[in-house]
Length: 193
Image (cartoon, rainbow, N blue to C red; front, side):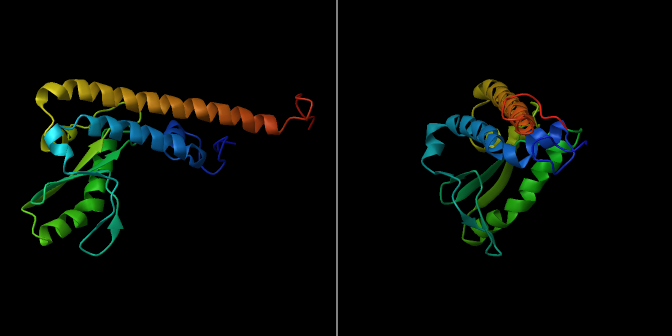
């Protein structure tokens, strides 16, 4: 069968394994959190006082959302959400980033309605295989990360995404091996079918 050897619910592709396979979700989240941690650690000290991570916020429609990172000094806000989509085509990161903008625009509008001078949504997209989305530069600028620090940060975030995907793949292979062992007899030898 062409279905995933671990979850058995979808076609087994690199995209599925590194981004969608339910048994891999903890490792997929860990990859995301590596990139988020790297980004938040790079924030200038002046921005950290107005930083919130994963705090629930309301959109103009009242929907509760949890952007990854918000810098909010009371008059200006930058709403950031990290995404690590599979780099499966030239528009993959752009489409994922656009999805984040659509998701969190209501939160920015709610902040503007509450009296903020500005509120902007800045997705931060790193491909699961290490692609860098050019729009990340605007995110880093709005977060106040100096240009001199961005080259190193770019390399480190890309490295984190790749190592996270490697960990996902390794876990997948180990789970696949465990799944195939479940079909073996108790003696450890293959079951006779």
